[in-house]
Image 1 (cartoon, rainbow, N blue to C red):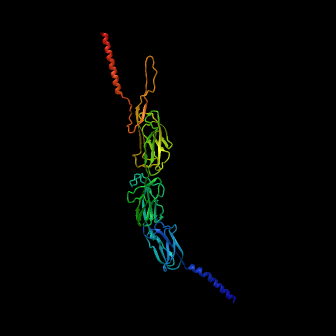
Image 2 (cartoon, rainbow, N blue to C red; image 1 turned 180 degrees about the vertical axis):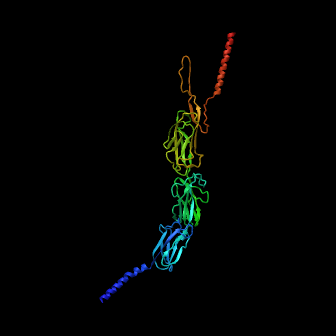
Length: 424
């Protein structure tokens, strides 16, 4: 009896150990395969055709009950693997066929006993130019550079960024294997010191929204250009003045030319300025001004904020009556390389008028043999709005010559009368 019980217990134990686990292992199957971009749509994995990596999964259902079993994503080689599936008729569906054009069957139903199933898909191409359009004509010239930095162009499918574009020469970019349909946008990133150019063709991106909705078709190329251009500079020279404010200035006086400069451009910027002509003796510049060429070329110490006004102060000693006016010009290119959009208000002019002051300044002491008095009239400079800047001595030579002639004539008559009296 004891031997029979022992044998029974051993048999039950072996059955208990073997039945659930062993049956589970014997009743499972494996599905696997590859998902790839079949660019030539021939249904064959050719050299150079890349795998589809971790986009949408391959789904598995029970083919009889339609019950969902699981989703299986591809790895870095584009391969999926579904293990431990029940050994029942299965349905396998490549969900990537919903966003790409399938080049093979996208559903296998039913599948019994597991197996290997590859799925090919094909997308579209988005290509264009992303460059700095210096002359704003919509066409890339050889001298127009690619936009610095990366990526500057992004492609979004739905709300998901597609992998960065490949960049070619001459500012060209390209997205390959793009999901098809109308849920695709090209987005332009902000580029330093640049802005998006106004659209000139149907291919241009909208600078207001910084994007362009497009339709991508399988096996076709859609073009979108992302053109950048320079930020506009707009410096305005205000009303210039001389300090100290006087009605007239003597040669030798020190004056300060003051020109208010306002930045009405699109970005913080630094103007470059020039004073024309052979200027008077230059003494110094104000605190905000850097001297490039003494007396003639200047820039500010740093960028001006948009809307900011700075008084440009330049100090001179008046030493040349031939210098007719102060003429400061803000150059059409800023120190940061921005271009002026309105050059008419970049001039600041202070005309000068010259006059002769007749007040004596030096007198010599008379001698017994001769009496000599020397006077020199200092030149006086006047700020004269709207004057031509030509020299004006203030003298009246014709009346003085007429008076001299009369005096000489009277002397001659007196001399002739005296000779006649002696003869009589």
